Image (cartoon, rainbow, N blue to C red; front, side):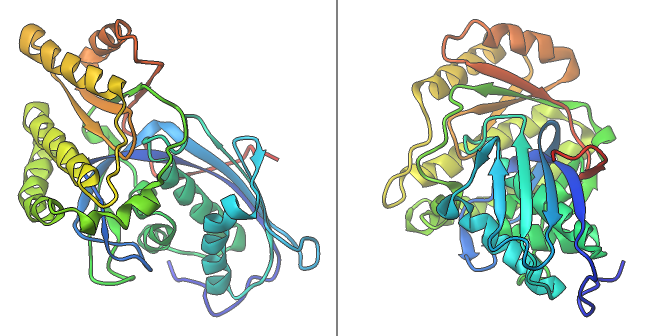
Length: 341
């Protein structure tokens, strides 16, 4: 589809979009160009069907509002908390050649800012809804590049199933693409929530610290081989091949965080409790389940459908687990006909 950049929309519109979060198998941590969220390496993820953000956005006629009105999970955001979202809306306004304000109501069905990639689903939903409501006909690839400006991992949530975000060289080439659709593999993400609290240091801030770690260069150098292993494991639907690679990359990313200046610790005691328990379940019971951890304390445990009940039953015995979220692979953003306002 062609991008309607040259002709400003003639009337404001409204749209409701649901976008899935995603869990990265090979992580994105640290940027080479913060102005466009250009990552240091490719990353691969699985879009989630059951951890998502729903956003209704309405563009307002000129003069009806002096500022953008953004409500997230029932709370009206003040100017400080809304600033990142407003900057992203400004990019879309510039693209469309308009100066309209918006009303946005957004809801997550999982704890936000706690390591379950709420910025990925949030910016994917916001970008898609804003562009659709303006009548901008952008391809999924172009939407991926635009969403990346708001949140790097949001570029991956523009596609369903198993997705790779190419590092690229600039704003045009740093985009995601689908490796396989959701139906390719019934791989499940069982999220063990040890804390739903908002983290003190955002991922956006943390990316800027990565280069200060003496371990960062080594991790980035190891990524190409890990990417090859993950691509092959997904193609073959081989969890035993995928698992060790994603665990190692998650630990390497958190090692970078812990050795940055200043140090960044997202883990809590419950994080380690689950890691030790999972190792024991594999060694003693042969349970085929592997963890990864995003920028937060909560663990994502990857398993196949036959082992979901076993994983949930074992997690229920751990005192640190507050909530369990189970998600299958999910679709690209969906346009809904039931608005939030």
